[in-house]
Length: 142
Image (cartoon, rainbow, N blue to C red; front, side, top):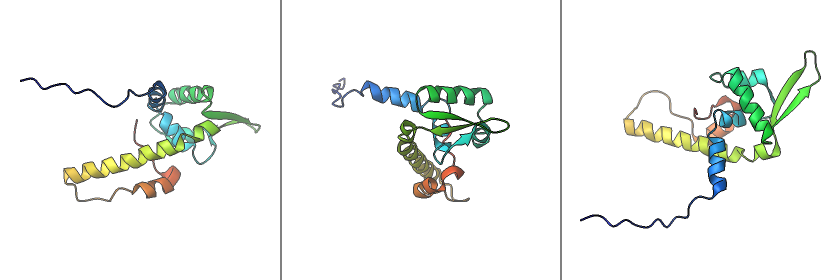
């Protein structure tokens, strides 16, 4: 006897949810937002913060984030000229979301280690410690 298919009672996600998740899932987006959380950073600083990103990809992502109003670009009059990137007001609105994702990543990692029965090594940072560590902690790879 075939099982009766139950109707889903959860409403379909609204279009803005899908759009926001697609935005956050973009290559290196969450990393850029994470590393700009404590203040402006120059391109070379961001490159060293995110060593796996190529210069071309970082440039592309910063331009896209600037066009969306998430990141601001400020040319600093110095010799040689320097450019600093910072989060806009809208960009700062993403910080609680990114921090929540990082917290969940630590929980998932701890659960995976528990399930695998790993006992040696150092314990992962608690989500609170990770949030307070600021720039020293990397967000989950993605």
